[in-house]
Length: 410
Image 1 (cartoon, rainbow, N blue to C red):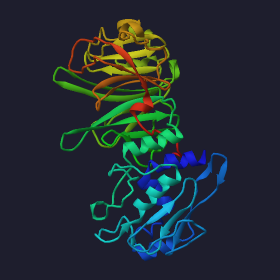
Image 2 (image 1 turned 60 degrees about the vertical axis):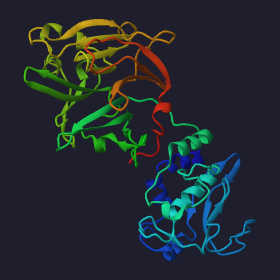
Image 3 (image 1 turned 180 degrees about the vertical axis):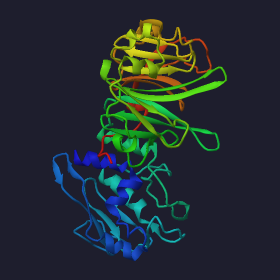
Image 4 (image 1 turned 90 degrees about the vertical axis):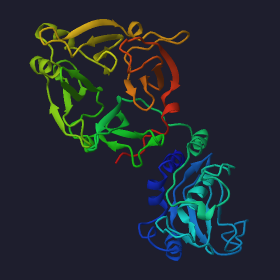
């Protein structure tokens, strides 16, 4: 498992590898100081196939034979470094290594070479794809200081060590407005006491994730049951509100995101929501309040009909927040999940007690998640005012979102 954890950490290369291989000083100095700082450092790789390798040596070597290695270095301008699977990494002391913070055309980026060699230690071979970190030839002036693993590199690691799996308590796209009135969004995955922000443009989680919920989303409880973002017109006014919720019956708690249009989040914590408080939060009339004094597993705002869908077990309760106050409440309709979201031909129906349902702005698609399985509503169109649904099983969520891994939260 330690080696698997190393493989997972390799996916956050600019964060983790910098900390493992290079001290802060080494990132700021030229090649000579960097090589001195590397002398004697260790890279922990753990155990592989019964062969214990507690430490992988990161060694500075001179021209010729070294460390009983069968492969001699050839001096400046030839081979830069070499390594073996689950073995040590050797760097040629005659090369002009430089830090990633050195913006000159001369020299070799040590971090790039180190990550390449770590790939070999973890079991990756050379590739003929020039954009890959495992490309055999160092391309010199073509390379930029900043880099990251390609999706193909990450998939190659997964073929050896497997994929990261797990169950989520909430999944949603958080949309907010910039000062220039443009909208931005990211996808968030919540699990227990931590969360990941998924950067869709790069098809990966943010470097350094997961983070603790309590630290970054003050007031939001661990393992929230759901997230709700409503956006609709009432006359000339726009209702733009978002909530987290957790709990059941009279102990249900709400967190209102009171600055949803901002780049920062201000939370208001609602505790021990009783009938009157609950009615105020959801604008329910007294006669229809009873339907909501129950346990919900999920909630979803549908942009097509502007209704809120509450999920409980194998049932869906549809609530219209736009109705006049005297008639507002549950329910426009109550149906089985499989009736409201019927399976496409040849596909298994949605199960009860789903883990997450959300709309992806990246894919323009409604998704459902239960355990490791992922479904999509293949005819969902937010511009359509008809709520016609057809759900199909896509596969596993980790085939769509890569490397959401339970490494240590920060």
